[in-house]
Image 1: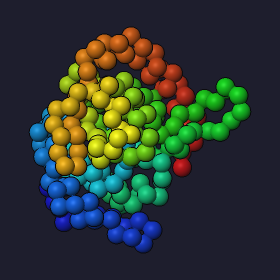
Image 2: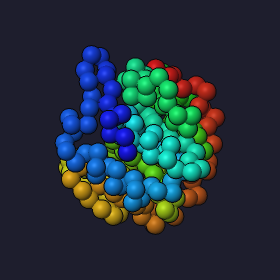
Image 3: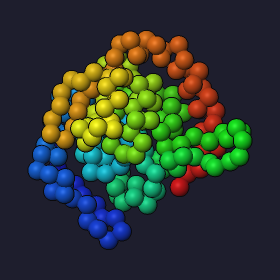
Length: 209
């Protein structure tokens, strides 16, 4: 891990690892080495320093396919990615809510639902942005039996309903490592392909920012 390369500037403010505590980078690095050593597809909700760490991690993995990072701010996403991101890294900025139209004819996706439009299952999912409970629900649809889900700032009381979908594997100071509950995956399995098809068909109508 090249820690010296971590950090970016947004709106005149330098964002650096030390802002998040001494264990932020080391704990996330441990999680990647332990649970994402063979990952080929990674999803991240909420761009930031973890995005840069994930790009370094993916670059070191043979056969790594895709890092998809979701955010709701295009300028912030560009600051995080820098001028020369690796080819496997894709940053997508989508509105948190989607189009504001009257009635029920809204065909747009939003920040949480966009990943369903890719048709991919992910090996490693980081939830570290807005609308975390919504993201957790979508993450369950995007998971397979061996998917690792990681939640940042997990001790906040409002995030505890996530445990209805996932079982705890490991809890550190900053991150909680989870795995999908088998009964949840089984319950979702019949519906997910159809939902992904609906999302894929709507993808061209997404209002990018």
